[in-house]
Length: 240
Image: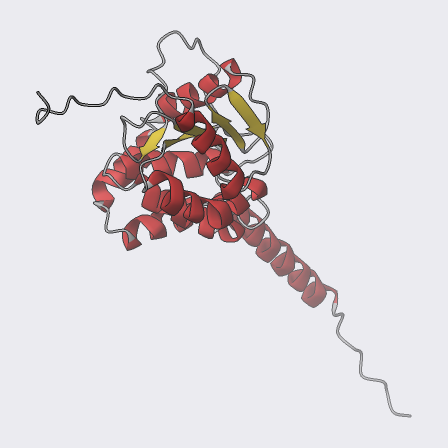
């Protein structure tokens, strides 16, 4: 009679596989958590020491009409305005000297990456490149928004590099968050005017919440310019 060869238990083998799987899963989880950046938040402290809110100017500072936009870099409608309406607005209105334009940060709390975008734009502004960064941020909105990533800074750093910024100065500016008071002042300026959504466009005393076209803006600007007092004609020195 042939004796059956006893089989070795596979329990230790499977137990080791289970431990390796748990360890590997834990490593992945911790790596994922480490890669996540905590969303930036505005300081809720007293606003008494905030700087004057001036936004970011484009165009002739002495223009008789000012167009103000209170915008959120992560707001999809703001992105559409920046990429579709604004190029026409710049050509036909701002560059033509009919009005100037000021962009004010108005970060909305539901957009976790928008403050990082405002901070990146403010640090680019310190090197005279606000509008270039503004355009790059809005053009890349689908890449860095909250649904796409928890680490938007790597995208903004890439834009800064492409724009030729001094990366050491830019990096120190972003890391120190030194321009947060400027962003908070811009937001407060909007809140003081009753702004509660983005984009909100203000021209003179007229408020346009939501979408507005370059044609509509030009109509308002032309009306305001037409209503300005006419400069007196210079005397004709040839007449006696």
